[in-house]
Length: 474
Image (cartoon, rainbow, N blue to C red; front, side, top):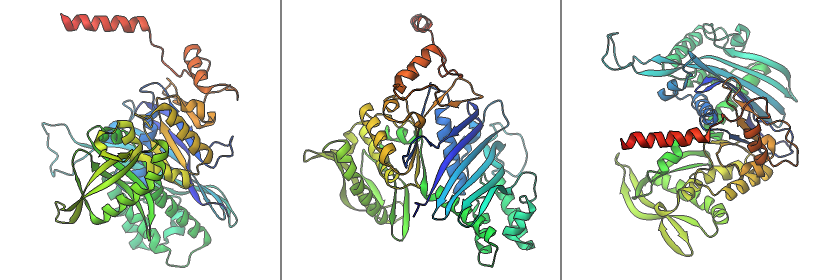
């Protein structure tokens, strides 16, 4: 039986930050590996983190949560809106389906805190508006063959088009239509997706209780699968993860099955003083740490971590809790994890997700600056192991070039200096080429169709340093 999974196959980005247009294919048909790895490399400020941001926005949208206001600032300064497109492969025992989802975001005034349109001394608050959503499916399995077909298109429509698909999914019930009109208006005003809003998903679920054609069951099942993927199988670790580690907070990210539920999330643990955690959270942390230690002691020989129980405590809300302190144990000696290196803390914060990526084909983890604080040889070997023997999908950005020597070249994407064509894979790379050396050579010689590095002038940099110093001293 084929393994069931959902996996990102492609991302298109338009007018997000400094990416006017960028096309990213995540599939690697050149290898027989089960895993899907994509490392993004390039000059500072050339669009690496923008891909992680696009995936973070997708996470918010698929889970029906409001997209935070900060992303309103991410829209390119020369554009009114950013548009994002995603392709998913959905594999099950009956065959393969593809989902295509796209939407736009724009910045709008947030007037929720006032009831009069009066001038203000301060700048208007802004928020994100998610609009013009389109959802398409194509199917090729034992039950059906269907070319790419638009199922929901919210552009210039009362609720969504085509009308035939609306009738198939919701029928003629006027009460349902009114509920969906309200849900669409509320989603537009609350920075949420309409197609993946709680109201839309609940209404779709209610329709499933009746007798419907097979086509309805297919669309409903695929939509539910995307919702599940967003909630339980897509994880995005952005720069905030590294940032909070530097102020002595360890964001412990995890995913595991704790019957009868999936347990997922990130728990922030204080490193410089005890952390009070609810009893149920205490059990989760203990299980995660025991699971991680199996791998941690192999990648950092002899190192394990422990959770020291400092006794009963009480949360601010009056809930019973346990007070804990994370400890590092090596050579039978314990010290607070606070005093370990930033790299060790970074590895610990994401290790359980890497374990899940290695073992489960339907897990997608995106990590910004994966190499931050991690020894380059270890980084290269970890990525080699996950790519060759793992099952899930890992997307990362990095400045450390060691993985260019350990990963298949089709697992590597490079940014360019052209905002209209921001992402490329290097061409003319032979099997015996060292991709790291090849990349350095292209920086110097510029042999690709797109420039991958905006040249700097050493003499001018040196002069600028000297000039700045003279101004400082004057």
